[in-house]
Structure formats: C-alpha cells, structure tokens
Length: 305
Image 1 (cartoon, rainbow, N blue to C red):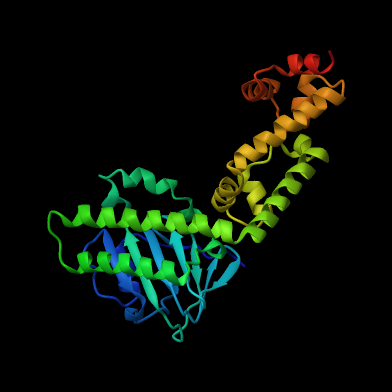
Image 2 (tube, rainbow, N blue to C red):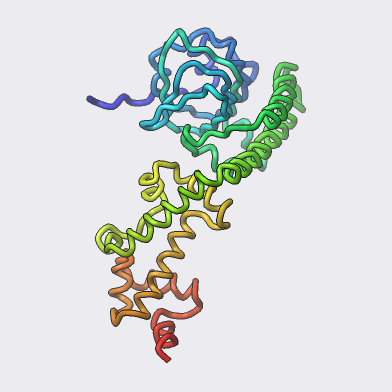
C-alpha cells in the first residue's frame, strides 16, 4: 500500500480552521484551548506536518496520536513539542476528548529575537512522542501559571509591546521545560541507564564484529534507530548521565578500539582505519591525534618501549 503523503499545514490560521476554531488573533502566534476544538475528523489531520512550532499540554486524553510507527496515549498527561516539517499522525474520531492547551509559534514571530537561534538548541522539539515530558503535579501548576500569563497577554490584544512580552514569556516557559526534562532524565534513571547499557553494547558489537569495516562508521541516527529512540533524545539523555552526547561516545569508542588494535596487532594504520569504518586513513589519523595528542604510530611506539 502506498504511504500517504503528509498534508502540509502552512499557516496557523489554516490549522485553526481545520480544527473548527475561530481565526487566531495573531497570524504568527496563537493559543488553543483543547476543549474549544469542535472537529477532529478532517482527513487532512490524519497525517500532517506544520510550518510552525507547537508546544502542547495534553491531559486526560481519550484517543491516540502516532509518531512514525508508534502510537502514544496521553491518559496520564504529558507535554509534547513539535518542530516544523515533523510528520504527525492522529486517529480521527468524534469521540476524542480533549483537555489542555497548545501554543503555535511561527518561526517568523521570533525571527528578530535571539530565541530564534536558541530554539534550535532545545532538543525536545525533535523528540518522538514516546519521549514526551511528564511533569509532576507541582511542575504542572507552574506551567499552568506561565500559560495563564501568556494566554492573558495573547487575549489582551496587539500593541507595540505584545511581541516582546510574548517572546520573553515563551522563553521562560521553554527554560522551565528544559529543566523538567533534565529532572526526568535523572528520575527515570533505571530506564535511561538501561538505554545507556544497550547503547554501549551496540557500539561494542559494531566495532568488534567487523560491522564497521563493511558498513562504515556508525552514525548517531543509525544507532538511535536501533535503540528505537530519536537521535536528539539519545544525545540529550547521554549528556545528562555522562556529560557527553552520542557522537562523542561514538568517537570515544573509535579511539579506544584504535588504541587496542595499535597495541595488540601488527596491522598498519590504514588497515586499522578501514576496520573502524574509515575509507580515508588520514581522517582516522587526524582524529586520533586530535584526541590523544599523538599520532597512531607514535602511540604504538610508546606502548612497546
């Protein structure tokens, strides 16, 4: 069966229309109360992408959403974040019960501000639905207070101060969400440590069984896919637990495996580079020297003197 092409929702006004909501008060920024949504059965909502960012608090949902191949329930409440061009899939039903709110932010709204650049640093806009933020009740109350302030400013009407105030309030909201995600990485320590163990085992298998020589250097995206998590979530989780992101872990594995081969075999530097997934030995030579302050040959010599 041919896969459905996601419907591209190009404006906030169009999205509001699809949900049966009034026209937004601002073309580039909107606040949606989920209980105000009057329809969720338009076929275009089944598989869609947005041209804007969304931040949603979903509580007490009846119904499911799909991200990639995974369905996700929001019965217990969660926050989800979507960036432009991410594919979102939803079940279409009149029985859907909605509670919570959604912020819609077009990139043009924040373009004049430093937040435009910083927004790309919030990794959770690239997380999958099963990596949603689950705030505690205390955290929910704080987020609801912030949202109440944003909603009040949005409803008050537009003047020359509105955009500055909304962007500053949005940045505060995102900073709190960043803090709460950091807390979630730590409080869900067992699950995340299990993921770390799986990650390290996968890399070890990749380099010790010859996969690197035949398949090339592993990428963060490939490893994350095998672990069934998003690459952004994997890197952020590792950074909290170990202080290093996924790419740094892969690089460390390359260096350690390279040291082992230089010490225990008579393979040439070129042969070792090939075993580690490098087509160009110079790339391995450059990385090794940058990380150890020694060339591969000088390291080998120092280990045999």
